Image (cartoon, rainbow, N blue to C red; front, side):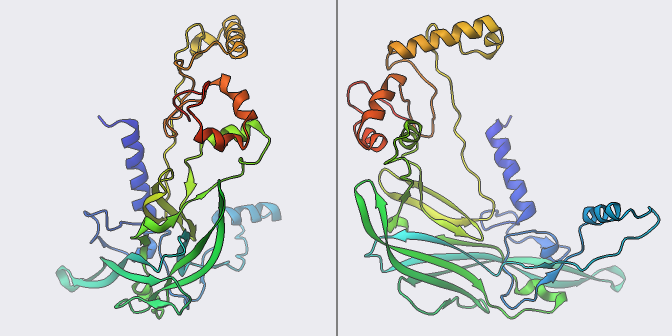
Length: 364
């Protein structure tokens, strides 16, 4: 039987397939055949040609009913249909990231699906129209210097636009020089007629950076210089959480090791997911943490008084397990809080000096 994590992963996959469509990783569906144009099947994840006129959509049915009620119309009367709103669809998407100044180029892989209209003859001479998917992949080296867009070969108009500029990023040791890079996949194909408009659209578009070694992580240093104890503790707990890139018209999926400054991969993602760590209460002798037992008012009062006494006296040793964040990988003992608040540049200093007396051997 599947566990809860596997069930949630399956639900997320089904949602992605329903809203966006298959990717190259979905081998069973990579060459799918649809009975209708893909724009009728999928709601997002595609790039239409830049010169495509704004589509128009019908007025929302709920909006029509609300308008009729406000006007006091009878049920037998048909409300006037107002002008439909223009619907602008995306023609580009991309990402921005920081790299080391010595980086000369990035290897970029673009993936998307193209759907081709096909006709087949059924019994009785009746023609049947369907759309067959083709997986497309183009890899190129993007020089990190100003220049015109890079046209992707054999794509009829897809290109990579870039913006490169030197900048600085702040870390624990001060400011350092880096290069800010923005890359966009742009659809500059010639729009097709209404009947064949999906032929010029790039579905399930994706950008992946294939050389992540020179990518610079960007940390949130908002808790570094603050005097707020909670902010400092939060800064310590999440010191290994960094941003590797930022998406434009799309989200980013990345996996890296902030401590070693290495990113395993970066790619765009239309339906982002994240791991939410489970907080597990520890087993502390003399302290009741069970919710059923704490439902009794007297038991809850006694547990609260006991916990306050333990914290005030600092009598809980480092072997006691306080609530743990598995993602961060450790615990922070309450008797460390005063020492943490007093330390210069407290949270980040503590992350480098976690073996000092009074600190737990594992930190969160």
